[in-house]
Length: 71
Image (cartoon, rainbow, N blue to C red):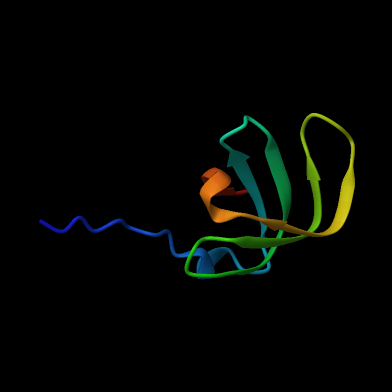
C-alpha cells in the first residue's frame, strides 16, 4: 500500500514573509527565497523568537520543520 504525503505548494509563498515553527519549539520569521523537494528552506532577513538574533541568509533543514505559515 502506498501513502501519498501532500507537500505544501511553497511556490505561493515565494518572496513573501513567512513563519516557520520548528520541532524544537523555535519560531523563525523571514522572507522565503527558495526550497527543494526535501522542504529545506532558504530564508532571507530572518530572525527567531527566543533571542533577537538577525540573519541575512538562513537555511532550515526540512526534517526539523513542523509548520510553515504566511505572515
